[in-house]
Length: 595
Picture 1 (tube, rainbow, N blue to C red):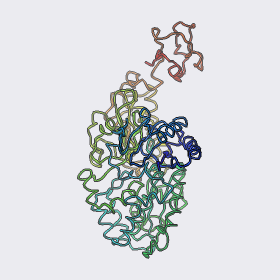
Picture 2: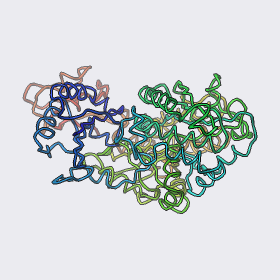
Picture 3: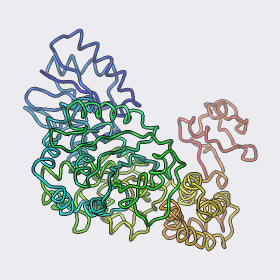
Picture 4: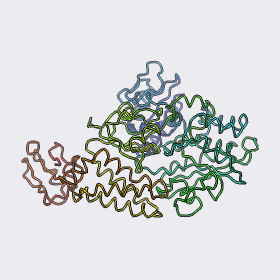
């Protein structure tokens, strides 16, 4: 029977997928026997949500984008019942059946190599039967339990070249071997799902769309290092991920994949969920352990490292969501298949969250070594409005801004740090020529300064002093010597902070100073923002030739700064204007501008 499937990840639900699902559920009841209704997670095409897929008996799969309840009704009546594809609403045909058109977004998915996202947007994340029907679904666990030793599991992961996808890029198999080599009556496996970078949503989408792949990866790790207990540390701001994880864990226990004697192997392991309160510093593993233990999330001095003394002082292995999700694929398909992808020192694939001024915002998984330009233009579709590509922020608030002139830089663990940025967990915020790089540095430093746990003086106080300088500069009150102060403070904070938050917090400032120093000087010396973004340094004007005197701008001005008669050009009094921007957003003729 034809299946109609609604994408119900957070992005889809935010765009109205629940209403679409409800309308399809009603139609399914009315047209009994016509189609089966299902749900799935995010396929990555967040920019086209809500998404509805029609899976036909002949294998053809058609994904419709921007679906509302009315269009959902048409899909049922015209496509499912009538056999006519609504090509004007088609996002992509994933597998061509007889006469199936390619669709409008084939390049987005066709340019990817999906290992971590292999099941996202394909299976129902709330049905373990869907997962076990996939090539890896708990088959990797059976192989690890009955065909491999703990040592051979670790060697397979080592040979694959998998490196931690949380940001540091440490070799995963080597990390597992450290925990395996420390004898203890209790060991732990921890999954870091505390995804806090602005613009990053890779882990959330995997947990919402394919939670069993992460659970299976953790069980295999536990078998390899000899752990009996595990924790998934997931931020409470991810309620759907937590709900689906809870369902998946219950299903895994009911099917004997978790418990005291998994599949009769004699090996026992179970997993609990710990909800984090949204502290960014808890992305650092020792602060995360403190939070699980019920203490305030603050980093601890290392050594000893977690493989020796981690959670509750016991040997602990901690990886992030994406790292664990790779493991079942590697165990089933072999280390050589994984190591054949990517570059010599950065094997495999990487998931990126594309956000910002990009046409196709969403998730993309590509081979390591893919260039920034390929991600932005070939997969992301370029810049909204065909504006100039200016830069990309990689690595979240602790990362750095990479200019468009370095767009041919391969995305891997060696090339990205050479630019001054970091790979991070995979967030990519794309910027166009309307973005002020001084303001971007201020924005990210404001975030990390607020998220500092306060333990280190240089991180707590130094980031605040840097933020104060940046705020002065964006207001046109900066001094040229501020640039040297920023660089000096950045070095001191980086060298004197205990954890990765403080050590990397200056990166956005250092990279923007490196590549966009002229913008800093323009703010300081000319009291001008080249991007016309910093409101303290711009004024608002009305183009008399474009203004038709519709009076909308005047009616929307909260302080009465705009005057003029109906059907005649209006004028803005900048001595009164509070620069809220409502005049620009309300003008239908492009007559209002900043300068």
